[in-house]
Amino acid sequence: MSFEVLARDGAARRGNLRTAHGSVQTPVFMPCGTYGTVKAMTPADLLSVGTQMLLGNTFHLMLRPGSERIQALGGLHEFMQWPDPILTDSGGFQVWSLGELRKIDEQGVVFRSPINGDRVTLTPERSIEVQLQLGSDVIMVFDECTAYPASESEVRDSMELSLRWAQRSKRVHEPSQGPSLLFGIVQGGMFEPLRAESASQLVSLGFDGYAIGGLSVGEPKQEMQRVMQATVPMLPEDKPRYLMGVGTPEDLVAGVAAGVDMFDCVLPTRNGRNGYAFTSRGTVKIRNAQHRDADEPLDPECQCYTCQGFSRAYLHHLDRCGEMLASMLMTRHNLHYYHALMARLRASIETGTFPSLIETLHNGWNSLK
Image (tube, rainbow, N blue to C red; front, side, top):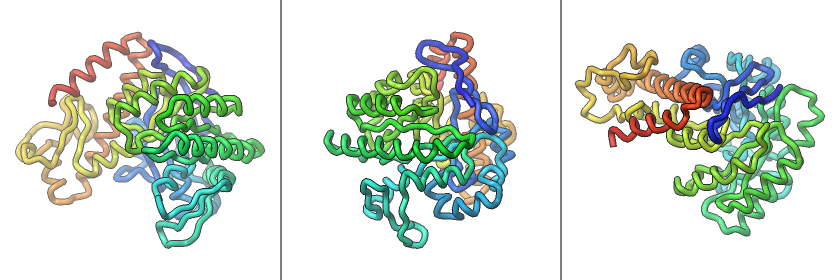
């Protein structure tokens, strides 16, 4: 297993990440299969739209159906019939989102299960154990997602706790002798010096890759961009860089321009289920009455199954009737759009045309504004 940078255009990188379940061409977008499925998509559909790698979630799969059960049934790949690489989030973000339902201390987190109210303990050791049982190709250290807004002293305490948890995560992962990669997660809120300290400490510990966490948690978009752009250069050149939970097509392009290699977000699937389509001409809101008689595809430039076969009028009709096919077709389009976008970005980095592609993309997105 390895990571290799194959081409560069400015800070943007075109790479290849080799895992136990195959190679991933980067930059890459990973759809979220939180519960062992990407909503409204079959595994065959995911492959057909160009998905290379999926994200699963330790927190949710640990609670239901349980990592021990998944392991006994052959691991997460076999359980969900997905042949290619899987990255699992450690559960830190989900624990953070529980708010008052959880209590954090040095050992880990104690919380009430949102499913049945049971008392559950999640520690760095348990998080790694669960991810190993799932058979993930990329495992994330257990961290605390820092709240926004927070004072510098609060963010420092949280960041330092995450560093100690990262050390404990690494100690559990090292003896496993399994094929998984372990990524560290840079925290530090909106404070660049704390981000630098976190990155430096993680690099000294030595991980297979490095993620930027704690963004897209309520901060203004300008702040997210500032912190992301400041943090990426702190990470090793020869390791994959992962921006967690971000974002829109514009966010992906900005991340790639800064040197990020991996992305995940619920946006294309969640928005698809709620009637929003990402297109080369901006976002289409299929529920709007203007699409009621529109005999045209979501995106005339798109080659996906949805755009090649169905009109906006038909999608509008399905959505207004609450038909599940609306979610399936809209989600399929959005994921195809995201993967096609990443493929175009990879090709432009290889050919040295990345800046001109960015200009073309932004001109298209702004044409409906």
